[in-house]
Each structure stands twice: as structure tokens, then as C-alpha cells.
Amino acid sequence: MPEATVSLRGAAKSYRGTPALTGVDFDLQVGVVGLLGPNGAGKSTLLRVLATVLGVDDGSVRILGRDPSVGRERTEIRRRLGYLPQELGYPRGFTAYGFLDYLAVLKEWDDPDRRRAEVRRVLEQVGLGDQSGRRIRALSGGQKRRVGLAQALLGSPDLLILDEPTTGLDPEQRVSLRTVLAEVGRTSTVLVATHQTEDVAALCERVVVLDDGAVRFDGSVRDLVQAAAGRVWLSDAPDPAARTSWRTGSGRYRNLGSAPAGADIAEPSLEDAYLLLRGASADSDVAA
Amino acid sequence: MSTVVLEQPRLVPSPAASVRQLGVIEAKRYATHPLFVVGALMCAGLSIGLPGPDELDYAVIPAFFLGVLGLVVSARLTRSTDTSAPVLDAAPVPITRRTAALCLACAVPAVTALLIALLHRATLLADPIADFRYGTFGGLDRQVLTLVLPVVYAAGGPLLGVVVGRWLRFPGAPLLTVVALLAWSATLAYLPQSGSSSSALLRLLHVSAPYTAFAFSDGDNVHPITVVTTMPGAPLWFAVWAVALCGLAVCAALWRGASATVRTSVARAGLVLVAVAAIALALAATTGHDVNHETDSSGRTTVVRGDA
Image 1: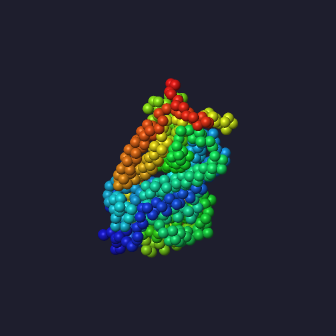
Image 2: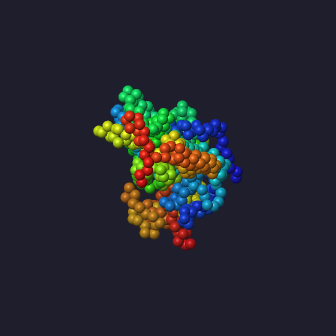
Image 3: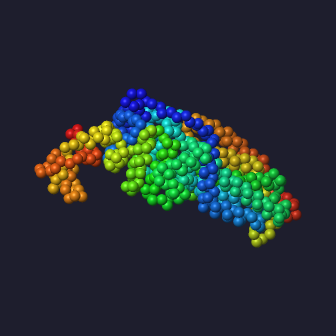
């Protein structure tokens, strides 16, 4: 098994007594990993821990072989880290280039020529090469998001942590982003938290599902999808016994769970598998 | 499972290099801030032209247009990156260096004040004012009042703005600070004007204000000046006091978010500055005149005894 870039053992974090992470264990290696989970599952908290801006209350965290709770080691980690938070605001008056230039200095790109070249490289990488001189305020939501992604890509980090990177992107931009991340994932560790299961299915080999601050699933996308095999059905009417049921564009109903009468079995998607896993989690919570 | 360190050879830059680079960026942002541009134009407009009635009080112009407005400018610049905090906090360059860069950017209003003061000086060369209008102050004090203090005020306000931006998170904090600053200065700047200037406490209060006046006249833009009254206090030591306050503002700003190591250094510097400030304040209050002196247009000086 390849060695870990990130290693968490029993990582726990609470906010004023409310648990956000409850004993999270996992390792990350080079490649693209999807992080799925409902709102409030602890995804953003986990990413902030990995981005070294938040410490854990309990457990151990090793990132790039270093301990983020030690100041000097934390700085070493940050030198090799790219982070896109869920919500990133931009200071007024900055152009896309100016903002990235500012952040490049914060990432210790002190040689002006190399810094300029690096800023141009990441702007081109996210498709904003021709927008670099525009004020960020004047950019569209998707373009702003790409500026955020560009700053995370500065310096080709060994660990790239992205929280909802595809928010506000149109389908073409999302495909373009997947291409970029797949390329980065060949040599770096990329963790992508998202609600877009299709992005995870298209991009990631491995998926981690987080719920109530704990890991509910950690494995390959294929294994998660396989777990839903035989539990997705198409019928002409909604099945009241189904865990979830909705009318599709074809006019038929997609049912998750046991087979309704006269239903046709359907190929499960990652979204189906995720919803079924979530349903099982809810059941276990009720049982508990 | 062991954890791999994906090390790449990398030259780690010195802290000074990143502060310098960030300082350049922040200085550009400062120089292009609309409030600074307006303030600088107003300051230049009022400085380069006919000299005002109280030449010794010239510093009030840069103090307001570059210092007070600069407080608002730098507070806003400091807070402006808060929206990007999650990303900035995950960068290897810590907040203290960002703060140091913001403090460096305060050189922009300081240099602007110096240039404007020199232009003002050139105006006076072309159209000199009578010597009695400098009161009893000699050459060094005149330089301090008309050249040094304008620069100190122009830097001091913005430095205080960085402190406000780093420490006061509520809306309107810069404006509230401006009001407090103006009230403090307005209350104390002309305290000895009444003539009850022999009190040591009063002299101390007079020079403790971040902006204070050292002279006033009986004239204005319409009526000719016949008498200039020099108030107690030593401008040179007052300038040292004001510079020490600027240094303390830098320390206060740097303290926010600093590591224990940095805080130790800042605390040491702060203690030295407190000592310097205290000594300078005491000297400013005690080494100048202890009472008002009136100088008339013939150059004759009269000591004004306390009337309170």
C-alpha cells in the first residue's frame, strides 16, 4: 500500500460542546479522493483541520509527515499545501492577478519574476488567463470560484484540499476542473469535499463518506456503487416503501430500496449508493 | 503504516523578504485608496499657497488630511483581507508579517507629508513670513514643528488605523477612534492658552495629546497678526514622544495573532518604547517654557504670568 500523505487517528473536534468530528480515522495517499456527506456532517471542519487552520481536541493528525500542532512543522506543512475553503471572500479593489500575486507572496514566492510566471500559470490552468486584469468584483460567481481554485494551485502543492470547488461552475467549467484535478492528482494528494456525486464518480477512485462527524464509508467509488446493486428500481408509480423515490425525466419513478411490484432493476449510480448509505445511517441512528 | 514526507528542495525565504514584498503591495493599495488621494490633494492644496496665520501650527493640515483620514484608510485596508482569512491563515507567511507590511505602507502618507511640507517650505522661501511669527522658537524647534511633526502625524494616524483594524472588529471602529482622537487633541492642544500655564500637570496634559499646538496668534486670514504667543512645552521632545507612540502602535498591531517568540520580541520593544515615551513626555513638559510668552511684531517678547 502506498504511504500516507495524511494520517488521522481518532481525530475529534467540538465547538462549545457540540461534536463536529468524533474519532475520525483515515489515511490519504497520492490521488484524488472525494469527501461526501450531508450539511453539518463535519466535512468543512475536517478540511480546516487538514488545512492547519484548526486544531483537533483529541486524536492525532499527521500531514506530510509533520505534526500541525507544532508551530514550525505547521509552517512546513503550509508551504506544501493548497486550500480552497467553502466560502472565500475577496478584498475590494484587487484584480484576479493582484489577488493571486498577493497570495503568492504569502506562499513565499519572493522572486518577482518567478512569482509572476507562477501566477500566470495558475490563471491559465483555471482558464482565467484573459481575465487576469479584471477586478474580482466584476467577475462572475464561477470565475471568482476559479480564482479561488487558482490560489490553491499556486506552487503545485503536495496536498490540495478543496471544499465545494465546483460551486457556481457551469458544466463545461466543471469538466475542465476535473481535467485539472485529475492531472494534479497524478503527483499530489487531492481531497475534494462536495455535494456533487457526479463529480466524485467522474474524478475519484476513492470516496470517504462522513456523517455526524464520523466516517461511514471509506473505499473505492466502485465498491460504494456496488453496494447499491439490486436496490435501485424503475417503476411507473412511486413506491411508498422505498427509502427515496423521485420522478425522472422519462416519466418513470426511480426507487431506492426494496423492489416494488412490476419494477425494473436499474444500474445504480454513486448518488443512489450515497443516498442508500445515508438512509442506512439514519436507520442505525433511530435504532440506537 | 508509516507517513511519507514528500520533500522537495526549497529555498525558504527570509521573513524580511516577504515583509518587503507585501509592503510594496500594501503601499500600492494605500497610494491608490480614494480617501488617501482626496486627503493628499486637500493637504497639498492647503499647503502650497499662501501661508496660514499660524505657521507654527502648520502640522495640523497633514495631521488631519493625511493622519486622521489615513487612520480610516489603513483600518479599512487592514480589515479588507478578513474575507479571505481562511486562505490567508493557511499560508506559511503569518499574520504578523502581513501586519508589518501594513505598517510599512504607512510610509506612503509619511513621504507624502514630507514632500508637501517641503513644497510648503518652498512657498515660504518665495514669500517669507516675519520672524516674530515663529514666536520664541529657534531653528531646530521650527524644523520640528513644520517638517518633522507633519511627517510623524501623517504616519501616526495610519499606524493607529492598523491597530484599530487588527483589534477592533465592530463596524464604525475607525470613525469612533477618529472622534476620540479629535476630542482628546481638541481638549488638550490649547490647554495653556488661558494663561494658567504654570501648572506642571497642565503642561504634562498639554503635551500628552497625540496632536498638540505650541503657539497661537491674535490674527487670522483677514486680520493681520500682531502678537504670537508661544505656549509651554518642548517641540523636540514632543516629537520623540509622538514617534514613541507610533512605535507602540506598531507593537500593539503586531501583537495580534503573534507567536510566543514574536510576542517576546514585541514585548521587549514595547517596554523600551514605553520608557522612551515616558522620558520624552516628561522632558517635553518640563524643558520648554513654563509659561506663555508673547512676541509682538517688533520682535519684543513678554513673559505672560498665570492669570488663573
